[in-house]
Length: 350
Image (tube, rainbow, N blue to C red; front, side, top):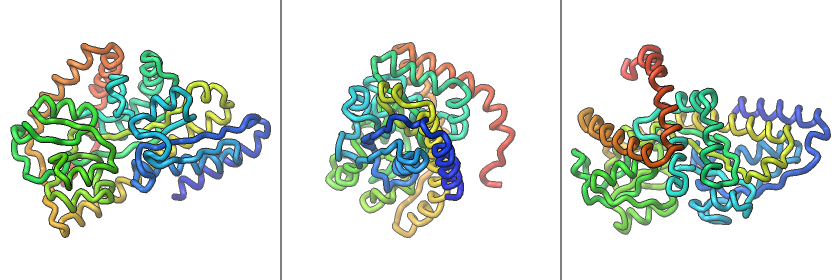
């Protein structure tokens, strides 16, 4: 955590030296979509809240509300836009029914690695596009990338998955655009918050679920109920979280306060990714002792999934101009990124 402490110290020094930069104090209530004990997914929200208070010398104070304490997880966008709360921390893919393009900023099936995504987001116009996407659908929010993790697992299942036909008729919790792909394969896809999934699996309300990476799934206890864990997480190679701030609140913030929010969220993005990468290997290795069978999706099945994914993405692009514009921007970036990616990195088995 030396990086975090260094950033906090520098930001605090700036705050103390600027004096009147914080003429108006900000007091924000922040509901979160994920419990703050979840590494890389929920933990960045708690870190950002604490860091903003320290770095601003108390000018910005953020009170975190765990999922459901103040606002239901799936209502965060609307609550922030309406000004019921000043800010919220969430996975914005939950709002694809209201803003069709936002899943492209949250998790894309067969999409970018996390470091490629942040390259596009920070340098390829992604941040500005996201503000436009929300404004075009009438939402009064400022969105700031504030966390990212690497691949999820492809889900937890009671029975082994051997072909795509195994999804036909399955009741499964699956998020975002990946859920649309499984619906195309005949699955009955439902969406529910992470805190409800263990009980839903245990009672048979759902047959299977995906949620996140091993370090998080372990905390939620899926391995206690079902024993087949599927890889790779084709549907979410990156998962990005955002700080949503009411647009009027953002406008009222000073330039220094905005800079601290942006710096804190950028640091949280790094820390969230680092935490997941550090913890996942040990957790996954430990699953074997609990009787979990980690299965790899065969290459030919992944190719079939990718084909269906491309159909779904093209159909979504045809229905929404914002989706089309963002999707084309990401695809154009990936054309050149693959030249680098295919040559620069060592094979994982070397």
